[in-house]
Image (cartoon, rainbow, N blue to C red; front, side, top):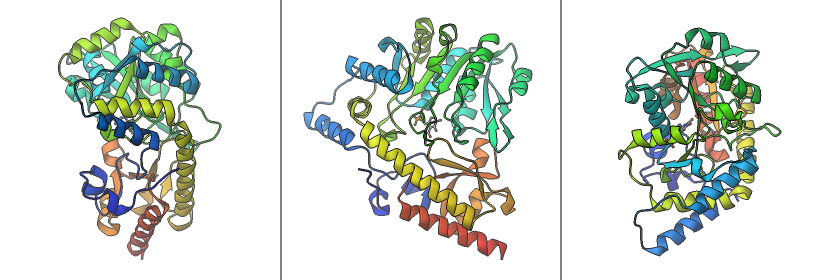
Length: 382
Ligand SMILES: Cc1ncc(COP(=O)(O)O)c(C=O)c1O
């Protein structure tokens, strides 16, 4: 059963969304939905053990992730030794960038708009960033293959992919992933695929296409990153894994990591094992709930706020909304000041006239926020 949080239950808990993002927060990718009962039970059991010493990723969890990759994403022979645990996806792709880009003239390529930390990982890696804008064509967003070809240089070392895409909500097709693999092969790039939203595909009949299904020779230059954190709403528990089929590449990544990160905490392992093993009935209900919220949001916008144009959303619970018709300098500031609604600022993703709206909340809170946005827009246009 999906249980929504009430406003009061999330406030004053040290939560970024509810304590730092204004009266009605539709920001950061954190759902106002309780984690699955199997996860809560596993955490309670682990807590009751009363010993919380150093932990490692046990074979149970490695096997559970491999079984999940095989059954849910069709990876033919995922291997437990491909997996490496880290406390977050952002440190993970930053670490891959550091491994690939060893000189200041080296470059990471990424297509924009995109999840903001991807536009900054080169700063930690002390190298350069190449951004190639997606093209908006026939109502959808596509890779600009020509621009990618003309932008890549002999110094480019890594392509950072977000799939499903945050904030565009696109599930890249098998053809896109194959073409990207070929692009990386021809230009000798490591393909680092952040697939943290891979279990949040909302359109029935549509499938996530993991980079782990690329042909063997391209797998040797592929790093896939994922986590149970978005799907099961346990981001604060901090568990991510990278899957690296090339043992030498994984050894290089571990070497660059050195001693800069701690071992993961006992709760991260307990929660992740329970989620991957037992969380799938809850997950089906979650997808139904998110579809209902998406449909409510989109029909509300169409009817009440037609000047806000949301991108059709195939995956994630983050709607990407074009607000250029509003005619304000910063739609993010406008909705915060005039409606008390916090929306993620498109400027941080590389697109200042957009906002990103997190609709994984109760229908009541969603309606309350949308009504406030509608009233603010009406007053603005009056
Ligand atoms: C594409 C993407 N990668 C990574 C993250 C964050 O990952 P973590 O909290 O594990 O660093 C997010 C969170 O919204 C995301 O959307």
